[in-house]
Structure formats: C-alpha cells, structure tokens
Image 1: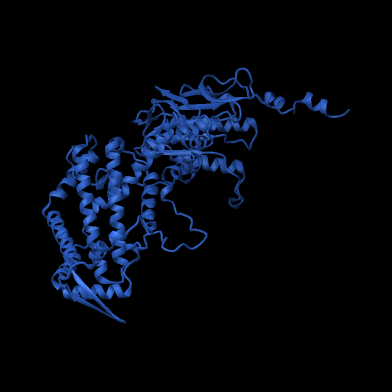
Image 2: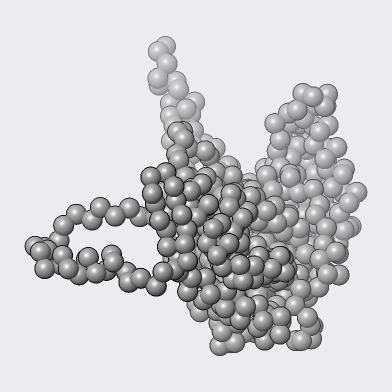
Length: 538
C-alpha cells in the first residue's frame, strides 16, 4: 500500500476495505473458543455498569452513551475477521506503533482531551441559561484545539512506521495548519480574553439585585484582607465554599449573567455568533479515532498483564498456505486470565503443520488439555485475523476464510432431535460450507453412539475434510484415527512419568498409545475392583 494514502481510519485502510468486511454468525465459535470471555477481559471497561444500590446525588454517568457507542464498535470489530492479508498487516503495524510508550501515552492524552471536550459539550447542552451554555461550548472548542495541537506535536516527534499513523499524522498536520482551524483558534482565544476582561458591579438592596457597569472602584476585599492580616495568629479554618461548575448557574446567577450581557452586547453577541458558526467544529475522523483507539489501547493493556506474568505475546505471521502453520509456546488466553487471577501456572504448547499435513488428531487421558489445545488453536487464528497480538512466543497462522467449531452441546429438547442426529446435522452444515482455507475444530463428537458407529462416522467425516483440504483439529477418544491418512498427524496429552494420575497438560506430537489411564484414576480414588471388594463386607 502506498504511504501517502489519505487517512480514513486506524482499523480500516479505506472505505472500500471497510465495506468489504462482513460479520458472520460466530456465536457458537465464540462460545466454544471462550472468545466471549477474552472480549470481556480485554474490553470490559465499556460494558454496561451496574447502577448503585442507592441514589447518589451528582453521580450521573454522563459517559454511558459514549461507552455504549464504543462497545458496539468493539463488538463489531471483534466479530469481523479480516480475509485480506494487507488489511491484517495494516492493523498489525498500527498496533506496533501504538505499543511505543510515547505514542501510547500521547494517544491516552488525546482520549482524555476528547473526554473533557465531551463533558463541556454536555454542560453546554444541559445549561438552563443560554449564555452559560455558550460559554461551555466555547470551552469545548478551546479544549479541542489544545488536544489537536498536542496530538500534532506528539505525532510529529514520533518514529512511526505504520500506514495508519503516518496518514493520521499528515491528516492532523493539515487540520492544525488549515486556515479554518487557525481562525477558529484565534477567535476562541479572543473571546476568552474578552470575557475575562469584563468587569461589573452587583448592588443588592433587600430583594432587589441590580447589575451595573464597572464603577472603576478598587477591590475592597483585597484592601480589607490586607488590613486585618496583622491580626492573624496562624492558620484558621477556611469557611469558603468550593464552587462546582458542573452544578450550573442558579436562577439568580443566570439573571445576573443576562444583565451583564445586556451591558456588553458586543462581546456576548460575538459569543453567540461564534457558537452558531462553529456547530460541528470537531473533525469527524478525529471523533472516530477517539472511539477506535480503544480497540488497540485496551488490547495492549490486556496483553501486558500476561507479559508481566512471564508469558510471551507475539504478532503472528499470516499465510494462505495451510502447510506452513507453526506455533510455539501458545496458550489459551481465557484460561490463562483465570489462572493469573488465581496465581496458577499456565501451560503452553506447540502446534505445527507442514507440507501436506492438514489434520491433527488429539488423543490422551481425560482432563489432560486436549480441548484446551483445540480452543487455543482456534483463538490464535481468530485473533490473528483481527490484526491483534496473540498468546504465543511465535506463530505462523493460516488466514482462514471461516472457522467452524463442533463442540459437545447439551441436548436441546426443542428441536425434537436426538443427540446423535443433532451432531450429524451440525456436522453436515460444516462440511457443506468448509473450503481449503477453512479451520474446523471438533471436540469429542459422536460420544452418544457405539464405538463402532462412532469410528465409522468419524472416518467418513475425516475423509470428506481431507478431500476438501480444510485444516482440522479433532479431539477424540478414538485412538484408531491417529493415522487416518497421509494428511493426518497425531498429538497426545501427557501425564506425569511417576504418577499417571497427574496431568501435565502438555500435548505433544507423537503416535497415540491407546492409554486412557482410567485404572490409575480409579486406584487414586479407591474404586478399583480389588479396593471395592476390600471395603464391602463379605
């Protein structure tokens, strides 16, 4: 892609690329691969917050609508895998630039500036007094200008490599130097200075409040304070009340302001004209940038939690060749997040497919990490297709056109199908849609039928997937499938060499050994035949 393409977005290189992205129905995939948990852990700050159990005055959650907008954007991005390698690299490069400490800090400052701008705009909209609202609007324009300048200086001094941020730098530079922004900034400061110079007098006589032109009298408050300073004998309690701008003007203050405006029609007339002319002053692409930054910054914060725990995070290489998949020290992010919370160790595994290898048959003892391996493999491919970093030391992944999962489901009585029929219906849909660039993950299917029937069905399905050429991970209790054909490789969950009841959760590449270690488990829990006979009286 050329370097000087006009800036569109930090998540899509162009409008055409954005229009080409589509969101498939990934509800089953998200559930089976625990991607919903990954999303919640990474982007949970934007999920709806519970209301307090009691009413708290002046605690309105004004940012809730903004967070709802960002949440919809994040959900859409997380559920829309990319199929264009150039678009994936566009995001990867942007993420790498944003990992730089100075750029990351500068973007967070930009977000804070935009938050303050939104706060001033909300106060402007909520103000009962029109002039008060105009003053808050002026403040919002001022904050926007300062935020824009700070962003410009940060980007100008940063060493950027991504097309996204380099194009953003050019866009921001053009905004800052534009005649429109220059004039806006000058007029904003001129109005602020003019308002700051206004002086007036308030005369209170009983219930009558009069607003007068500045009589050019000295500040008697300062004179009195200076006179009585000689009697001060140390620090005393400060009885002054802190003014809270967010509370707004009360009716009396509002009427005083209206009369000050009547005494200074030129200044306040200019303020009104400015507010009317500057509606929609913020650049649409910067407003979008503010929302899209959460996609990267939250993910960076999320993955750094793993790095602080000693786990490795990498930027995967995406390929269209299914015979070049190579993953080292990968882990399940959803499971690892839970382990970090419980301060438990995280086990990492390697997966590799070379040449004509397409299918991985995973066997071994129950609760030995087989399903976790399949889930990890799926997570890596989905997150990689989003342009995000993944949980692994290094990874070369397939840029899939689709990911399919067939994990065990609780029997649904509403569809009037038995479990076996339901498995077959779901599998038929997968086989009808899968291509040579698809990833298919199957976990313990056909467990509801006999061993012979399960073997016959599994072989038919594997033959079909082999003919299609899909990349497949098949977690199964059917050891006979480990050497199905030349496209099949075997991986086995391992146990401790000294105690077969202890699972290592390491899944290694080797031929299936047919051991389920059920007897060792039975012995551990005291339910072997001999143990039961010893416990049951004759």
